[in-house]
Image (cartoon, rainbow, N blue to C red; front, side, top):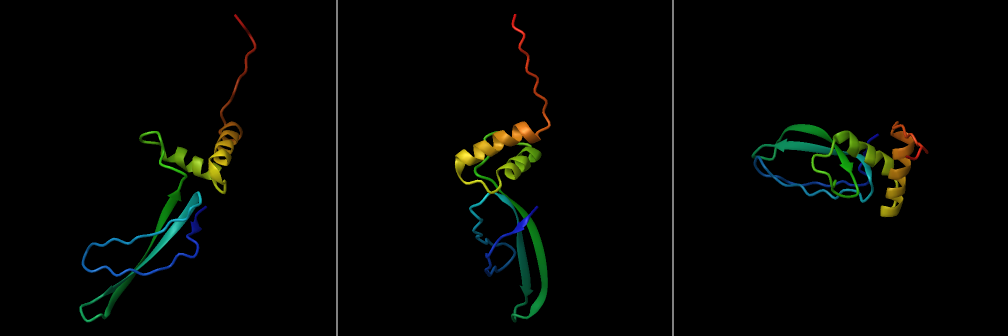
Length: 113
């Protein structure tokens, strides 16, 4: 589920083919949709066209520590830690979900050699 970036609106003028737009992302883990609206104008400031682009944005707590992390793993980590506050709650949510929702089977054997 993607949420719209709450309360973030602004404008930026870009001249030519390239430009930089700075965006402040939410300080909360989750899936969001960044909505960009481009208005194209001619030399006399006349409107030539318009384009809307929706970009999915995944906000995680930190950069993944595993190189080439699988997209599905990152998606699960964000889902499982959504709405948590701080590293302790995130770790607890991850551990709880790894054991309860991963569909991994754990077999405990009490046989000793």
